[in-house]
Amino acid sequence: MAYALFPDAPLKRPPVPVKIIVAGGFGVGKTTTVRSISEIAPLTTEAEMTSVAIGVDEPRADSHKTTTTVAMDFGCVTIDETLKLYLFGTPGQDRFGFMWDSLVNGALGALVVADSARLNDCYQSVDYFERSGLPFAVAVNTFDGELTHELTEVRWALAVNERVPVIAFDARQRSSVADALLVVLEQALNKVQTL
Image (tube, rainbow, N blue to C red; front, side):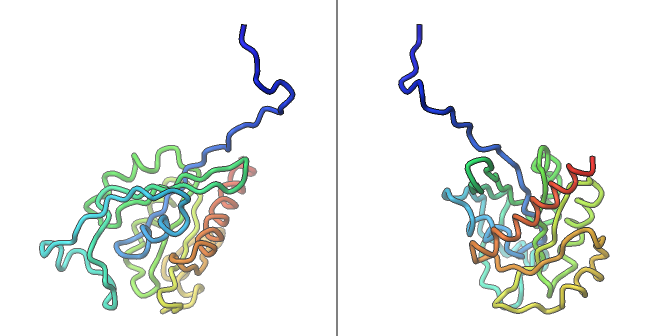
């Protein structure tokens, strides 16, 4: 017969695990987003960029980027005692798009990270989540506190439905990333409530 060590202690349930995707084009700040918020040392699959990538993988002109994600990034953050987010960052290059279906499987929502100076790089992500029906928000990374285009212009350029939030955030700041993830959770909750 087994006895509880503390029979009067209330049973505490572990937090509910929730999978969130962090997607977007090459060099927009997906790895930085996961790294900024993760409470564990994030798992990254960064590889050195090579001369073969010249003309294919073009970072911002002012970028010092020397590596790129070749599979995924992974991190987690506990929201409160009832909810824990598991973050999966997708690779940004088109040639790794075949992995997206596997990464997205079981996700509750997605954060599409965008660079307002290079909106073309996030069309694929926006289209993917619109087609899949997965709730998402577009978060425009404010590189050096700057937006090249206003958020209304970003929404128009991406042809994003007005029900999809388009927000500005700084991928380097934990509190800013937390706010963006809460917007994604709100989108997911809204979808569940309409079912």
